[in-house]
Length: 364
Ligand code: HEC
Image 1 (tube, rainbow, N blue to C red):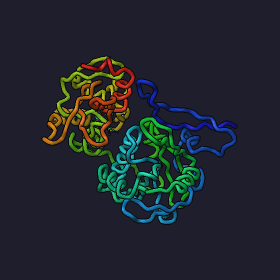
Image 2 (tube, helix red, strand yellow):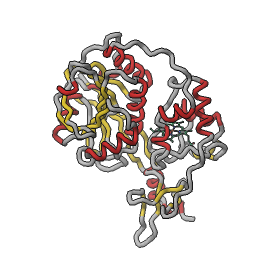
Image 3 (spheres, rainbow, N blue to C red):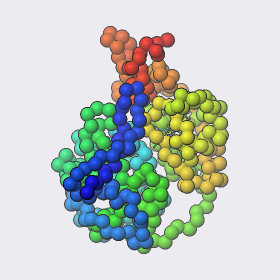
C-alpha cells in the first residue's frame, strides 16, 4: 500500500518563493507518523507506536533521555534555530501551547534537526528569545546519527536540501507522547483544528479539565502572549508593525493596499487573504484564538506602537532595491555583490532572487 508523506518545505523557484506542501509517495515503507495526522481524535487518544530511545543534552546542558522524560507526557517538535521559513511559525505555536497550558504537568521538547550548527549556546539563545520563563521546555542538541535514529523512530523527515533558503527540510508536526513513552497523537501544525485537538489531548492525558472561560486579555498582554514581537521585531522575518496605519503596502499579488484598521484585523485573523510581498515566512492565523473584543484591543495596541526607531549611529543601513525596505548591514545580511561593484542588501531571499534575475530593473 502506498503511504503518503507530507513534508513542508520551502523552495526557491526562479524569482519567487512558494511554500510547498509536497507529497511524496513512499513504497514499502513503515507507516509514517503523518499518516495518523488526520485520524479523528477521541476522548482518550489512541496509542499509536512506541517513541524511540534517545539521549541528548538540552539547552541548559542537562542530559534528557526517553527514560528521564517518563512519568510526564510531552509534546515534541522538530526545528532549527537559523531557519527562517517554517520554524518561527512552529516555535510561535509551541510557545502558544505552553502559554495556553499554564502549570500543567507536561513537558515540551524541540529537537534540533541541524546538529552541525545548533549548539547548546545557540539553543539557549533561541529559548531566551522566544520564551525565557518556560522551564518545561527543552531544546535538544542532537548528533547526526542520533537525529537519524530519532527521525526514523518518530517516523518524521529531517533531510538536508541542496541550497534554497533553508538547509533542512523537516516535518512540521507536533507529536504527543504519553507518560509511558507511547506516541498518542501526531498533529499537523498547519491545521488549527489539529492544534485545538492537541491541547485537548494533552489535557486528557494529564487529567485536567477544560479551562474556565478566561477574562478578556488586553492588547499588550495579547501582543506578548502570542509572540507577535518575536517575528515582527526582526526585519528579516516579518515587517515592523509600528507606524503601519495609513501606510501603503505591496501584497504578494503585486496589488497595493492602504493599511487601515480593517486591513490590520484581516492580517491577524485571515492573513492568507493579503500576504505582504517579500517575506518567505508566513504570518500565522489567529482566528479562533481571540474574541472580537480582544482583536479590537490588539489592533489598538498595534496602531499605537511607535514607528521603528531610526537605527542608532554606527549601524549602517541600506535600502533593499526591490522593496525599498531599510535593511541593517550586518555580516550575515543578505547581499549581492556584482564583480568589482558595490554590494546590494536585501530584506529577504525573495527580494534577492527577484533582483538577481534582472538587476537592471532595479537600478536607479
Ligand atoms: C511566526 C512569525 C509571526 C508571528 C508570531 C506574527 N506574525 Fe504578523 N506577520 C508575519 C509575516 C512573515 C508577515 C508578512 C507576510 C504575510 O503577510 O504573511 C506578517 C504580517 C503581519 C501584518 C501585516 C503587516 C504589514 O506590513 O502590512 C500584521 C498587521 C501582523 N502581521 C500582525 C501580527 C500580530 C498582531 C501578531 C501577534 C498576534 C503577529 N503578527 C504574529 C509573521 C508573524
